[in-house]
Image 1 (cartoon, rainbow, N blue to C red):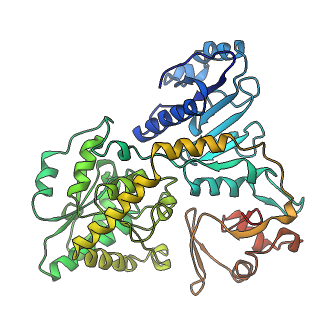
Image 2 (image 1 turned 135 degrees about the vertical axis):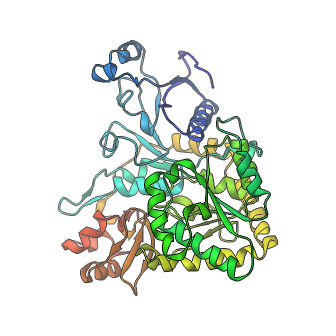
Image 3 (image 1 turned 180 degrees about the horizontal axis):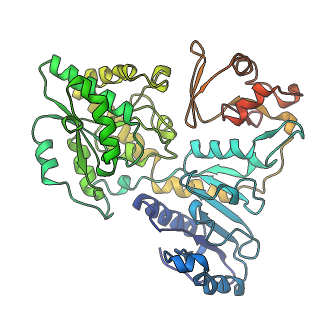
Length: 466
């Protein structure tokens, strides 16, 4: 990925990426995007970080003046591709490029006001089908009084470009920075204890994770088996987290140190070695994934993952391919005993390691067939070839469950959602039973309960037949 000068007579592109504090996987994915642009025939000029860490320059961004002057002096490029967190580097505009495209790795750490309903952005690209559906639902938010969507072109200006998984090409891991496996962790992996991993920083549902480990160890003790330990990131074991874990475990005679083993941020080769030696992965997360590198990497390395399916994790692999998605409404209601069912499933699965390995082998084959560079390049090329989006007739749109919804427990009156789960009142329950599948033309006026379901992300709109 080099910095190519803009050349007259060929398609040209600016790529704006903000690498400050970006995870290595995001940086590598951005490199893949630039290479995919060049495969699509664009001569691309990459603009790195223009954000200064100097407090003085944050007050007055003189450091931006030179780069902005160079952009002003140049002829507009054919395309500007923005990483989602880079929109503040150079706000989209026709003076920089004839067409502006934003690629979303996440939805929570970019300036929402700079892209939602912004007419200067021609195309929004999600890093998964799930992310693309969430983006569409946001842009298609209905205004029932004016009979229109926030962006009437929403259904033609969002596309999915699922990421390529680096381990498909480099099964042993790439040269991403990080630590080696600490000697104490290596000794634990060789000890005969049952070792799992949950190495995503700041994403775990602590109550779920502690409850699952507690029951797993009770089951192991009853069966006369080895203890079950969980490798987790050092940052997940802050003093506050440990204190809360200690209070949860104290009535049962356990401590966090009995279950959890801290691990530093590993380099990718070390991470894959660790995954290959672990019996299972755990991803009962509170933060939804827009893609899911971590769980795919685990399955690709032969280690099954048990998850609540938060975000895109429930869509990554078909059932029976090493990613075990299980959640109940009782878990969402924060009942610690509800997670005993997860522990029983893991305990039973670990009794037949051969079957688990067979499911992971199917998962590895699926990953190799779907999450590779050629697929990513083809998806980007197809997205960039889409015609200019036209507005759709509001009345023809249909109501559907929103993409954030994980499940609807009708008996309990609860909708489990990636955003926040909802205990439905009678009016909301009635609206949820009646509205999906109906067209906007059939819904001349919505009562507050029905409208609230759109505001909560429980319901959204889709194009008829889409």
